Image (cartoon, rainbow, N blue to C red; front, side, top):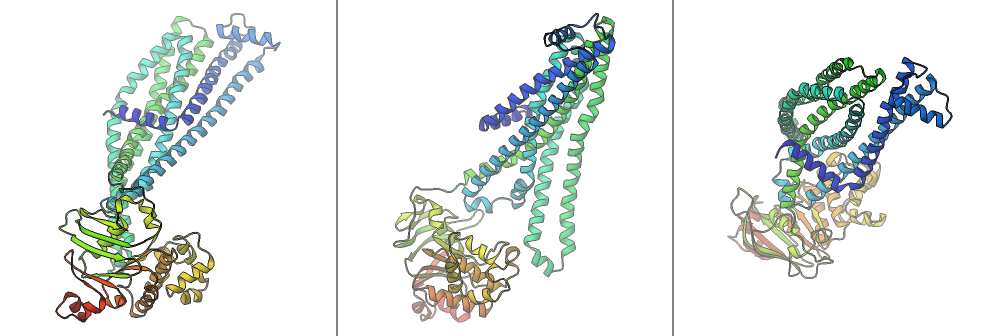
Length: 589
């Protein structure tokens, strides 16, 4: 598909989705065009007056203006024709401002729609979409390419405005002196032909600009996610130069792209003026009225810069196409990986959760989990244990619906998971991962993020159940203390207890603790373990554990190895059977 076809399709798509905005813009442009024509025509009476104040041999336009002045009993002098010319220009300027405002309204309305639709597509996608996507590409798409798209939406609307303006400014000269106008246009087109080559070059620059920006953003994101180990290894300079090298590559491309966008109109402008001057020189021999020649020259000098601006806008749009294509590609991928949604609304857990003959494999891996059967009964504590990589956390992803089994099914109360509306289940789950994620806000806000309808008593009850009440009360600002970026102002144990309180605040049907104590010190682990034991009799709990001391109260323990369930039973049963995987794990710890 050609670049022109791509641009036309994008414009038609936007106009179809936002008809009211584009219709109102068209009406503004039509009115502005009429006023612009009046601006050109108002120059003729003023020129005639300067040449002959008595109007002994006025042009056709001036004669028409004089008739109107006579009808309204207006005395004609320099101030009359001068103010008429200025008045039309003032009105034209006001309409240009109104059109610019309308274009900005369209730009931000369409951009908001694109952002909303994109985030909707992303958030409907399965976890696989995020794990298989380049984080740099995703971040760059949302952080840099979307503003580029927004700016270009303004360019597209501006281009529509410029086309209308150009048509008006050319139509008047055609009417007054077609020969001179055609000559000027032919010369302008001849002078402009070499600039068309830059469209394809601009598109290539746009693609390279997007690619290098993706890479630089990905490296920067990786650096800040790994800042602890970078500082720990003393590799700050290495990280800095790694990013700066990628940034320099991006700068080299974007300098060419931005310079090209600026250079095109500046290079074409004098050539356009030359075309108008040559056309005027050729027309003088035909002895056309000087006032009309002045109006034609005025129109051409107004129209040709618009033609120059159209070239610049076209270059900008060609730069934008790679950004838009990248966004569309991400949305298509997200839609292809969208969650399988049912129509059943989950209200509460009645019997339990059952994995029946479930197999799942990550791309480029072999048998992550294979033919497993697990049941998590309501009101009981169920534990998954095993060495790292045995598939424990994958089971929790399958239960939450972040992953879809390759074989077998996950059942909620004997109904397959894909028959339920996923978020109605997730809203009834409290989830505490190994690395708790806290937002850069207060403890209160982090808790309310989970359940924004909770009152003060419920907040403190959740903190108390998570053994976090005491340390929160000792903080200078108590529950309103800021936790810092990703909770850095809190210790690991404090973060984990806040995360547990956040999960408990929902009063969940199922509490999932995914290696929630594996990285904690013994005191913090003891506090979390105490909280879990208090909850064990009143809540359905799934614990993914490496440390076996946290699952002593478990009603059922599943031991996983190599993606399979190799042993199952109560903690008491498995801990007393020698020569078993669980027994060996317990005694090794």
